[in-house]
Image 1 (cartoon, rainbow, N blue to C red):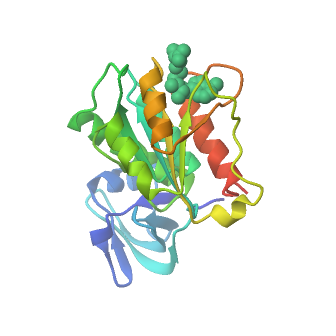
Image 2 (tube, rainbow, N blue to C red):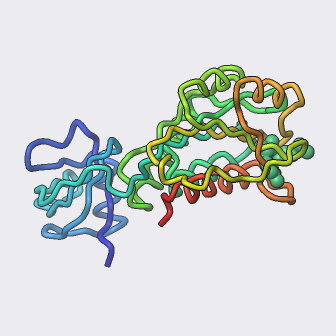
Length: 245
Ligand code: SAH
């Protein structure tokens, strides 16, 4: 069976040993019922993955001896950032979970003309917890960064440091999604994907995106819910970059 993954804070990895913190102790003992001697993976969210043999498992502590170390276990090479209009209710939670599983490196909750909700520190903390759970579940080793909310124009400016800047737009554009024939050459790319909130982008926002070198792309003839569009767009780009093979 695929060994279980647990999260360890980077500061709790020392030479030869990892020490799990309180939340993980609960997960290891109560949820997954691990015992001393079991072999599991510990991932530190910064690309470190450690195969460990548990040496102590109790309600107060959980630690393991490192057997093997791997860098960037389960990670795509491409660094894909998804800037998505903040969504109401639990829809953004869902987006964070799914795009973490798929392999997105950074998620930017974006405030746009039509976005109707904010993203305060409490939400950020919740999204981080969701991302940690998805990180473990999916076998990744880098925790996606979830930035504080950014304004649309700030996201536009970030595009300058990316080779690929793509905006998902329902109407107005004839371009369907294709990167290039030889997309494998792009695997080290930094990619910025921009997806609207429920109300979509305004004409001005689309114009601004084009002025900033974004390619407007459509994701097929059906109008998707915003969070579906975020997931579909992320999947398409990673597949095009050969990262889902
Ligand atoms: N009411 C809006 C729809 C917004 S859908 C309107 O009519 O414009 C929310 C976001 O999802 C959009 O801003 C876009 O970024 C993305 N999206 C949804 N379906 C899409 C599609 N078929 N192609 C490209 N982007 C899409």
